[in-house]
Length: 336
Image (cartoon, rainbow, N blue to C red; front, top):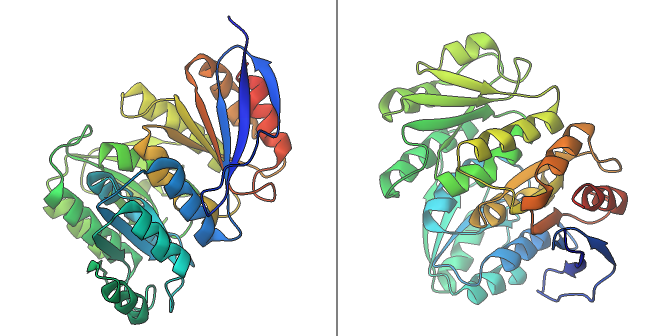
């Protein structure tokens, strides 16, 4: 194919774009961007700035844990809302400035007072913002409430009657599905590896679901747990978290609910950097793959090579300590 150049740019939490740090000839035009900040809150802001010029609604979740932010992916998709993170007891000036940049008027807080404290809500009110809180007794009940709200407000979905089901006590599979949940406005429900929590079972029974997509192997969600969902299901899995993210990306693109024009890479070893990246990637209709910090996971290599001709935008969530430059270089090499 025609040789063109790709540009590596960096975007910090203030929206400043660095000069290109590298260039090389490849067979497709790729814009590779590392989205990172000084901390998880700044990285979520950078993710928002990279994907959203404006938004009427914001999803706000704790940055100290992953379940609420990831369970809100589908609702974020309905609202075309970025996911921003906050500390429990204080909303930072930087997050408030990002809400102002977006021109948002409404904030949906996901999680209870122990996750996002009353002082945060008071700060939002003082800024003239309308807030609504979706919170259950635990992460499973909160996800069920978010799923109910998603189904109430959405106009349509590309996966009708379907729920995405992941384990609620670990983050990798929930990270990987977040962009697709956003783009397809498909609710995310959480289970434990060995059982279906009452709130999840009730949501499936009363929510008009006709199918579930169980993401993760039997070590993540046992067969008996999947059988207890009460709806027909299919399982999407790989040999590990990295392979599962690749398998799910292929599943989603095969059903036309996502594509490889935009690809996000995030570490599979920690959740903070990609919490805001699910919504940002979903807004672009892309997929998110998980990798080891210092080595592009082998399960990803054939996937990247197979979709090289489709890809235009490669987004890396987190700094070099999360996803090394060697991983980025290998990804770009495979996309030649």
